[in-house]
Amino acid sequence: MNQKILYVRLPCNPIFPIGVVYLSDHIHKLFPEVEQKICDLGTVAPLDFNSAIDTCIDEFQPTLLVFSWRDIQIYAPVGGRGGNPLQNAFEFYYASNPLIRLRGALGGFKVATAYYGELWRNEGLIKRGLKRARKYYPEARAVVGGGAVSVFYEQLQKQLPKGTIVSVGEGEALLEKLLKGEDFSGERCYIAGETKPRERLIHEWPTPIEKSACNYDYIGSIWSDFDYYLQENDFYIGVQTKRGCPHNCCYCVYTVVEGKQVRINPADEVVEEMRQLYDRGIRNFWFTDAQFIPAKRFIPDVVELLQKILDSGMKDIHWASYIRADNLTPQLCDLMAKTGMNYFEIGITSGSQELVRKMRMGYNLRTVLQNCRDLKAAGFNDLVSVNYSFNVIDETYETIRQTIAYHRELESIFGEDKVEPAIFFIGLQPHTHLEEYALQNDILKPGYDPMSLMPWTAKKLLWNPEPLGSFFGKVCLQAWKQNPHDFGREVMRILEEKLGRAPLEEALTAPIESTKKELSAV
Ligand code: B12
Ligand code: SF4
Image 1 (cartoon, helix red, strand yellow):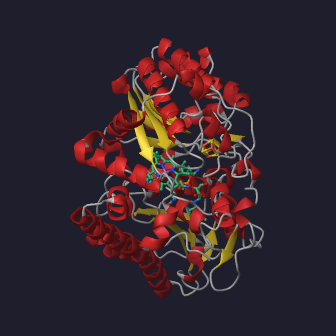
Image 2 (image 1 turned 90 degrees about the vertical axis):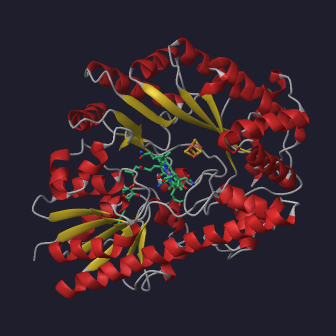
Image 3 (image 1 turned 45 degrees about the vertical axis):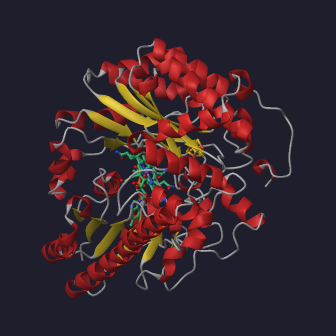
């Protein structure tokens, strides 16, 4: 019998569901006879999730359910999901005023309820969908994948219905084998209740796939809500230009989810894909790569892509991405400005070269500054978000002073209003060097649950260890009180007021010494 695949993007903020779009496009190119449909619960109101999935299944009667689960983890300095999780956690852990602590506890409870509620709801939707599909086709199967599953695949094995295939990383090769009826046990997956995830499954290399331009005419034909993302002008539609990141940053799991080998999608295909979206009215693109310019050796590929975008005549577009700003050249800066980059995020994490080295990030902060000057000279005049995660490892008052010096230099290059300090605290993730470090240093116990939001675990997973933990906690609380709408800048101001600023040269110089605590020794 002919396979019928229903892709269910589980509830999520309405970020363009590029994962299921690419999967269904890939399958269509290989198996044009297979019927497919996309059901995006990201565009559905919460009260209608059950009825929306029921209707999709009743109408389509799938033989295979592909559930895509994008995000689970919520530690971010932004509102959403029942409140600002970072603020609630910090109020609960660090406030000296008992009333504020109580407010934090209540807020934390609200966030935790929303968090567990979402987990159970998504698990419920998977069970419900499978049960309903089996009414029509008793052999119907469920496969679950996506960003959240890639990070938490080990924890999810007990929660999913027996027989569900749980996939890590890219799903193209797995779905292909499933449809061909081939043995898929060699893919990055396991079967809930039947097989166990292999040791270090996430470290296995993804199967390289030659990516061609997504066929949006076809996608429009299997996805009735596609228009939802075309109507609003402020959506940044995802386009992937490459996969993989060769770096080793201590807290990052992208490098294992996508693998260290960078695979470039042909520039002509990327431009062709953008052109199809452009012709449908899209002007904002997010290059969803782990890093748009992962290393110097990929600069020529990015130059080729941007030059082709420029030559294509799509002149009124904007794009954004994660950018390693140590890998820019004046030519690249020029192309970035000319092709409409109007926002980028640099995750330097700290403005202290010493700490950047200890976190294994491979950044040269001096080069980043020089490249930012080139970018400004090339005409870039938009917003830069600089991600700082304080207190990852070996932070001292001195390294904080250095970060302030560095940040002020970025402001002097782009303008204070253009540099947005995004203050994160690392949400510790499984399979990272930081997790290994926490286990080796008795901060976490083996067998801990990385998905737990119980206050005693969450305090360790929301990485802000003593001796500086309480200091940062109090600074953040003060910033939320004084200027909640400009939290990042306020944190920087308070830190500078309290600790002063180091000479810039100090920030840019890292003494070469190896301490026992250094992560590169883990
Ligand atoms: C780009 C990106 C963003 C951009 C998105 C821009 C845009 N307009 O699309 C921005 C910066 C906005 C963003 C924001 C956030 N993000 Co983000 N983001 C990413 C990133 C780097 C790439 C995602 C992507 O689009 N990849 C390209 C597409 C094609 O891949 P994909 O969707 O993963 O789909 C592939 C596979 O997953 C798989 N697959 C997908 N579904 C299924 C289903 C089945 C059955 C199978 C077999 C396979 C499969 O096959 C697909 C094709 O190969 C990932 C990390 C990473 N390297 O994957 C994090 C990631 C998805 N983000 C994450 C998070 C948490 C967030 C935030 C919630 C952060 C926060 N706390 O604020 C926010 C908010 C998002 C929201 N929902 O509101 C997490 C989610 C997991 C988690 N920890 O819970 C990730 C995995 C990062 C991480 N390691 O923590 N993000
Ligand atoms: S450069 Fe970015 S994507 Fe790559 S390992 Fe570091 S943090 Fe992760």
